[in-house]
Image (cartoon, rainbow, N blue to C red; front, side, top):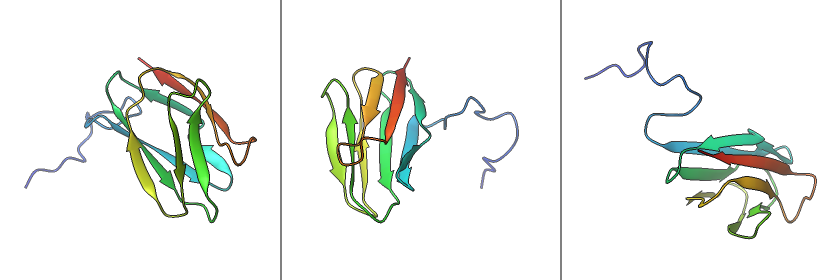
Length: 96
């Protein structure tokens, strides 16, 4: 079995498999700024006790997640995002 936790691996802030996770918890997005490569999937995970949405400001993605739910999306473009239910929840997606 191969040890994948050795140093010198992917230390650029994202996993090597092209999946980044955005968590909704405490009425906030974590992290608030997400960086993805073109074509990479973004895993959305609601770890809060209330429903949230992940809504791109341009309307290209709009998904709602119940508590404990996880959804995967593949954004076409970067930009700002928010939660329709909780307008104070905002973030930025950087697509490289």
